[in-house]
Image (cartoon, rainbow, N blue to C red):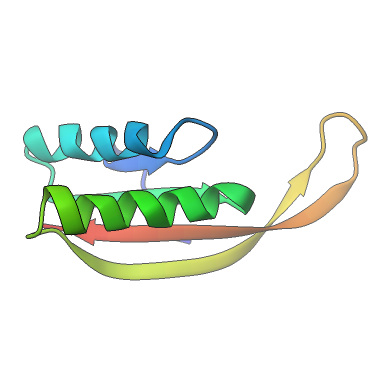
Length: 94
């Protein structure tokens, strides 16, 4: 996975889907042309939904440039055990 530590990465988690759409819209309003939606595990479906809502309803000139699928090794804080978790990055470009 390409690590980007600038302000164009939106981490998708437990919030409603429209929160991530709004975050992307805000980045686009501020002049960002490349946005990355990052999600792991169950949040992957929210990232896909956010990308589809953004490209189909709000900003039709934004396109999906690429999608990266990986598996990350995540260590549990409670039990200390490690497990593989699916991860996805959706790269959007205007």
